[in-house]
Image 1: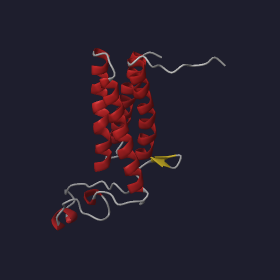
Image 2: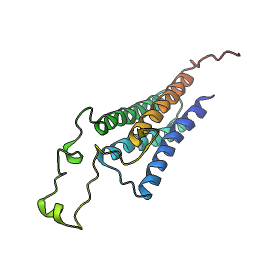
Image 3: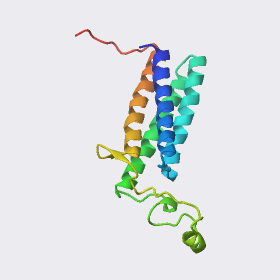
Image 4: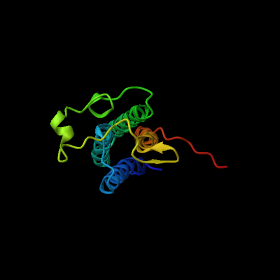
Length: 160
C-alpha cells in the first residue's frame, strides 16, 4: 500500500468509529464522559488525515498515530473502569453524583448522568470502549505504516 492509502485507511477508520458512535447515540445509547473523551482524538485524527494528504512527510502521520494511540489508551482505561479494575472519574462513576444536587436527583426533568462504570452495550463480551481500543490500536498500526512509507522505509512483503 502507498502512504496515501494508509492515511486514508487510518483517518477513514477514525471517521467510521465516530460515525458508529453517533449511530449508537441516535439509537438511545447516550455517551458517558469517558465515551466523549474517546471521541476527541478521533476528531483530531480525521483532521490530521486531511492535512497528511495535503502535506508530505512523516509529521502528520506521526501525529495521527499519537491521536489513535491516545484514544486506544482512553478506551483501555474506560474498559478497566467498566470492569471495576480501577476507579474512574467521580463525576460519572458510582462514587460521585456528577455535581448534581438533591433537587436534581429528585427531579424528573433533572440532568441525566450516564455512568462510566456501567456497560451499556457489548458484543462478544466486549464493551464499546473495548472495541474502540482494539480498532484504535489497528489504526495506530496503519498510521505507523504511513510514517514508514513517508520516510521511504516501507516494509518488504514476501511472496508465499
